[in-house]
Length: 220
Image (cartoon, rainbow, N blue to C red; front, side, top):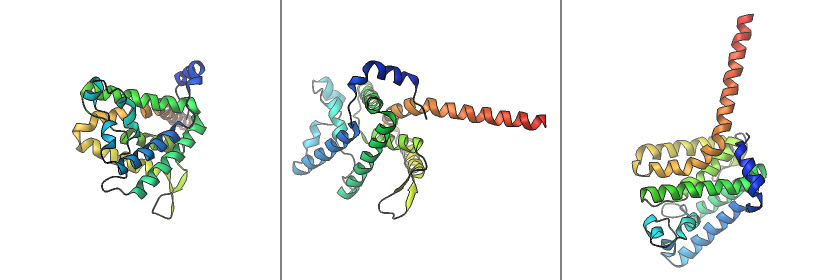
């Protein structure tokens, strides 16, 4: 699936700003933050995206909330955290191999701008959990039949089913949690921006193909 043409134009102009292995860096910073918080409870309190504190001068929060792991806590074990970030690392490498470093960096920037805009406009705090899921949605859209071994199930599963499962779960959260609906929508902006035009083009091509088949059968 091709990305919108404007991403090529931006790459031609700002391609030198690409950050190689940007998702790997994001994963490593999340893991580091988890260990620092485990050793010093409350460490992450100074990293969360809190719009009131951002406006008070704590500008680093518009970036550092991306480094706060939102899995591996509470009901989630560190083992699940390890699996989650290894999977994110793998997906990031696959997307970078497909899109290139600049377009993956641009995807991250779009997510940051969208979520920060949401937080500052609504006064609500933000989190990276829904945005990180969009990397999975991108991967499932591009490589739906790729099979992985999903821990702890020892059988191969096509990634499209994992994407559908998490998409349905996110939709359920959207329906049952009105307070974070705007956050979910803001987190999905990069995915819709990148994948939406290509998906619409595929749908149009399928409709045109069906229409031609009907005309062909009618001619018979």
